[in-house]
Structures are given as C-alpha cells and as structure tokens.
Amino acid sequence: MKYIYFLILLVHAFIPLKHALHMFQQNRYEFQRYTSWLKENFKVVCRDSAVQLICCFIAFSALFMDTYPLLLILLAAAVIYVENMQEKHMNYIKPLVYTDRVKRQIAVSYILLALLIILCIRVKNAVPWLIAFFIASLFPWLLIYPTALLTLPLENAVKKWYLNDAKRILREHKTMTIIGITGSYGKTSTKNIIQSVLSEQYISLMTPASYNTPMGITRTVREMMKPVDQVFVCEMGADHVGDITELMEFVHPQIGVVTSIGPQHLSTFGTQENITREKMQMIEMLPADGCGILNYDNPFIRNWKLKNPVKTISYGIQSTDAEYRAVDIEYGPDGSTFKIVHGDESYDFETKLLGELNILNILSAVCCARYLGMSWPVIQRAVKSTHQVEHRLEIKKINGRVFIDDAFNANPTGSKMALDVLSKMPGRRIVVTPGMIELGEMQDQLNKEFGAYMKDRADEVILVGIHQVEPIYEGLKESGYDMDHVLVTNTVKEAFAHLWQTTDGHETILLENDLPDAFNH
Image (tube, rainbow, N blue to C red; front, top):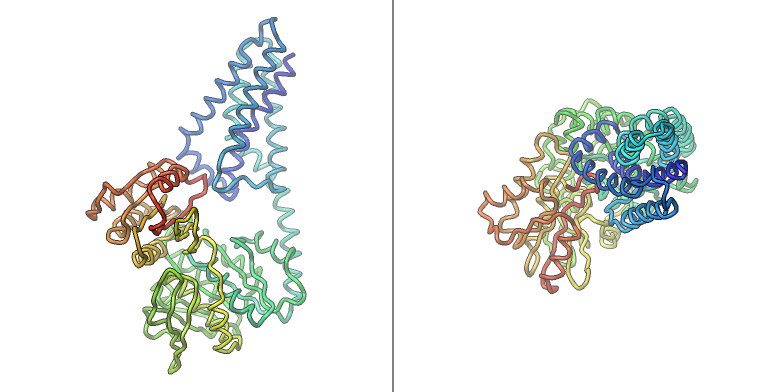
C-alpha cells in the first residue's frame, strides 16, 4: 500500500517542481539570479508549499489505519487533481517552455526526489512520512541546484556542438553582410526596423523575438538561414561583462549598431563603466573595413574614445552634429511624421511608429541602408510601410479601447518617452505599469523619477504589484499628483478588470512594461 502512496507523492510533487523550473527558466538558468529571486519570494514559496503540504497530509492522514484504504487513495488523487486543475488555469504572463533542457531537468529531478522519498518510507512509522510530505512540497525548489549541476556537463556538450555547427554555417556564407545590434535598450525594435527597411532591396534574415544569446543566435542560424540570404541582422544581448566579446567572436559582423547605453542590468554588470565598455565592444571588435553606427544622442556612446579606426556613422535628434538627424517630429494617433537631414539634403518621412526612440531606431536603419547603397526613395517607401513592433509603443484596439502597448522591457529613457507620447494623445490618458527592474542600486530612485514624470502626462495611474511599485507611488506623491487618481493592484488581471469597468473607449491607455511572473510581486 505504501508504494501506492509513494507514487501519489511523486505526482503531488510535480506542481512545486514545475513552479521551480518555471522560475529557474525565467531567471535564465542562472544560479545567482534564481537564488536572488528565491530570497525575495521565500515567504510566498513557503506559503504555497504549506498549503500543498496540508492538503497532502490530510489525504494521507489515515495511512496507518486499516480502514477504507481505497477511499483514502481516491481522496489523495482528488487533492492532486484539484491542484493540477488550479495550475492549469493559472494565467502566466510567460508560461514555462518545455524545452529539451527542461525535460532533462524534470527527469533528473524526479530521480533525485524518488530516491529521497524512498529513503523516508522504508521506515515503519509516521515521522518519515511527514518528512516525505515536506520533501514533496518544498524540496523541489531546492532540488534545482543539484539537478542543474548534474545536467550541466550534458548541457555544455550539447551547446558546444550546436554552436560549432552555427559557426560553420556562418563561415560558408562568405558574401553575406552581417549586422550586429546591441544596446541597453532599443535592440529588438532597431533590429525589426532595420530588417524591414533592408528587406525592401535585399534578401534579409533577422534573429526572431529576443533571440539575442549565443544559443538563440545559434538556433536562428541553424534552423532559418538559407544560402540565398544576403543580409543577417543579428541582435546581441549582454547582461554580464564578456557577453558582447563572446558574441562578436561568434558572429563576426561587418556592421555594428549601438542603440543606447544606460543603467539597464546594472545589478549584474556592477558599474556603469562596465556596461559602457561592454556595449562598445560591438564597435571596438569590428573589422578594419567595417562600419560602426552610433546614437550620438546618448552621452555614453558619444563620449566614448574609440580605439578602433573603423569608419563610423552617427545619428541623433538632439545632437546637431550627428551625420543623420531627425527634425520637425510630429505625433498623432496614426503615427509620426518627420524630416531626416543629412548634410545639405533633407527628406520627408512618415511612419506608423510612435516615440523618439522609434525615430532614433529608424535613423539607425537609414544609416545602414545608405551605407549599403539604398536610394532615398526606396528608404522612404520602406519606412512608411514598416509595421509597428509588437509591444513597443504599438497602437492597438482592444474591446473598443485605444492602447499604446509598450509592454516589453521598460527602461528609464524609453518609459519617459512613452509618457511624452501619451501626453500628446486625445481624451483621458491612463498608465498601467509594474515599474522597471534590473537597475541595481538605482532601481528605486529611477522608478521614483518615473512616477514623478507622470504628472501632467497621465490623468490616471494604475500600479501593478503592491511592493515593487512603492517607489513609483512615492514619486507620484512627491510630485503633487492627485493621488485620488492612483490605483494599486496585486495583479495585471485586477488592473484590466478595473479598466473594463471605468473606461468607455474615449481614453488612451499606456501599458508600460509587462514583467515576467518571476518579477511581479
């Protein structure tokens, strides 16, 4: 009989194990990030584990009684079924992706878990069973560490083989132009816009979504690259010193674009100097006959003393000495209009995109296009037909309401520009946000400034996540904002429930940042 209970315990353990792997995945399979998350959410983990432990214990309470064993088994199965149904209906912002890596980790975790439970139930009294209940409910959160360590050699071997295969494919594309893109923010939007503009004249491939890590780029090269591709637009992410160096040695772009440099990922880089040096490796490591494209509106980029004598092209809005500059910018519900000035030449542009950041991103695409020989009329046509980038100042209608969806990876500069765009929109203006993360010691101060900047730009503010939005709330209050128009909710679901009840379609609603489940608290 006890082995039936043993099997039920293993099934019961799947829920906390899935949660643990979910958070480990959202923390990029990194021990340091996962440990930090576990410390910050330890009370929540213990609370959820305690509920599961109590449910399981009730179902097993008559383990050492001889009556109604079948009824008890059914009761245990019912508890587990309810837990699984609750889990199934959870509305995760970013669900667990069952990659091959996750499947291997599930298998190893279950082997370790089974061995621990077997050691407990070999003893013929109730105490080891209580320990087994505890192991099945809470231990999966800690089991991540030995599981990841045991699977690490295999993961490294698989990664190395795929990486070498991708390098071989890139070497065989001798005539293909590779464009590398990095920055603290704006990488994905810039990549999409450059791809859209260049594909007007060239057969072009880009890394999809946020595939900006070695394995993401590897997957793109191995699964999507074709012999006919003429241009490869490759986003390169970095949140540790050495990341860009590693990617440059892997991809070897001839053109490098640095979109921005700021305090994003300050918690992992340590200092702003480290961030600047790492991002500028994109230009420092270009070949002598390559080209660096630089955003001169960013002081960290503008003031960098470049050691590589490679050709550079500058762009900007505020910088009057930038080689490509956007002027006379106007926004409306249908998009933006502006002029691009290059030397004595001036060209009119229109786009569906909104915000200064997107105008800067378009400028970087124009720099690439002109360097590769595209004519101004072709570039103008390409910019006009460029689609809005998903979740990046994207105008959309949902249930008759107008939204500006800027939900992806908010940063200090981008969030302020999003508020500037909102301020120019008609009707009542509403902001929904959980704030910004991964800003190190500056995070609270930057979120406080974000809150203060909402004054006179938003008529109503909905903050998501009681604890993490405290600095934004303080910034709003200190700025003199009318706090009767500020609502704090626990979840995004509650925020949208309030929106549907209090809006009628005459508003513009800005969704600023959409944190993964691991960071929403």
